[in-house]
Image 1 (cartoon, rainbow, N blue to C red):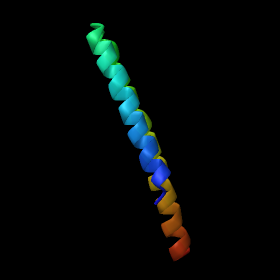
Image 2 (tube, helix red, strand yellow):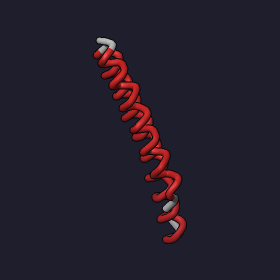
Image 3 (cartoon, rainbow, N blue to C red):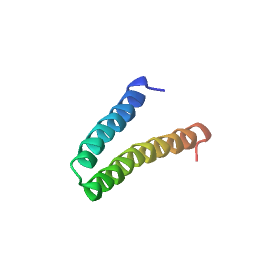
Image 4 (cartoon, one colour):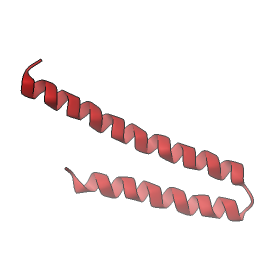
Length: 64
């Protein structure tokens, strides 16, 4: 497993949480909530890509 991937996901989480705190302090809760949703979607896209790679590796190992 690549450690850079873990750092990338953690970096996205830290960045989103900092911007989220700033937006909530500015009284823009709706934008903060949308930003959190966008962050979750970005991380889910990364995870889905990894799952696709895993299925391709399993398919290659069992030669389907």
